[in-house]
Image (cartoon, rainbow, N blue to C red; front, side):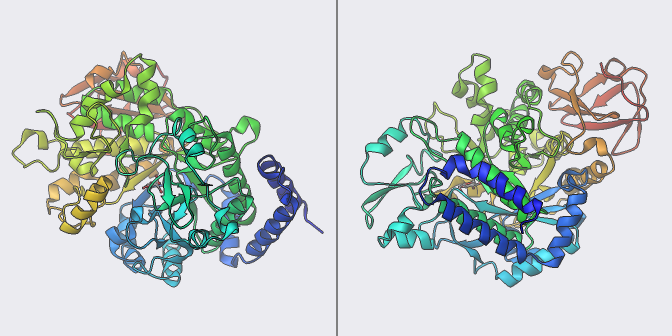
Length: 611
Ligand code: GLC
């Protein structure tokens, strides 16, 4: 007889899946088979993972505590193989890292594969990187070091040499049902009217002609990444079971790749559709039942008002992803670096929507992709400004254009001079590390790197370090990567870890991410949940490059995004409060002096009366 919990799970799953698939004639048989397969995988969960499930059930916000610091790396670029990553665990622990996001390491398409995001087989590790046994050994060592592991679950597409694609190409009608195929241009042309291109220059349009099938295939990203057809329930069940099999190997966090694209409908942008959210809630429901120690992170690089929807609406009892990237915060912080003005950053912070009690933002400075500027479109258009005109000087700055620019980045998919798409480059290169030492614009490069990380470590969320930023590594410059950059400019920020890093002890000490991690872990005001209140602009003027907020009851965080020394009258901010600097323990006078491109995390001894 079913236990009440199992019965509740079945009901919740039905409620989520019926609106998507209930009209299909074989719905009930499909659901019964899927339920049985979930039960088999649930029963196979190891005793160690069951203990993990129970411990985390007792501490449901485990993934968002003040000591949670993520690190994102490619296996091969960071350490060669999965075994190499194991050998680097001490480096991660010393940097204060408690969760490791390893970019795709499952078997990928031969040849071009979008850095592993074109998966050929979800059940195998990419042979260059190791084996399933190596993965299990790595996970076991990470767990023993209190580091959780996050992997990409590429939900939207598979490689064109995945078994489903091969069978489809061979004419198998069942496999063809896994993809979105069209015999002619009638529907593709209609979709193209409202659907944007992700890579407008290297992979324009959203459809690719396949000669073997004599069909147009939906390919949102590259022509070799075939979008899955989630109108077919088997696609959902196969991907959900894939997720559970990985969870049973000990995966703690799934980064759900390209979440906005899952469902498509005519006359829409095919982004963030309600059915996509419904599907994600169904993935969550399955995971909570069969592998509850595991959490979901949505990769939706969209404005904050849309990103927040990926948490689910707690008022309606919805549970979707636990975590979501705050890419607007990231892009607006870079805008503040270029402009020495924090207006956009302040706007994004002020408009960051509230979220449910068990959700947290992922706050980050850089990642393996470009800085996508369109996430700031709402803030720019709300001021009546043209997006491209407003963003062009910022994108140019990061391409090194202009006398004042200290950045050595490159534009991405933006050869049309009137359009702004993205910017590439490692953090260190974008903040000035590549300039020669006597150049005055180089002087504050370490301060700028630390300033950006200090913001992301204190804003409220789970901070993520991108591989190499902890050692101020600059853009990829080895010949093999140059060839990859020619194909896809994002390889600029995918250097071989440590290759080319200068042995400049002062520089490395200046970066000091470990000190930030330690100070953060010691102060629960800086965790993902404590309340954040912006300090009024009159006290921290944006035009001066100042930005400040209170966290929790006793912490004030102040940032100076400018080349100038700035002062802040703490008496005006929080009268009668005595502060100490959380990193140095120094007592701070009522006038806080900030050197160029610096920050201060101040802790009061008594609760702050906010102004
Ligand atoms: C995500 C990844 C990106 C990849 C895309 C397609 O956005 O971060 O690198 O190109 O998905 O899989």
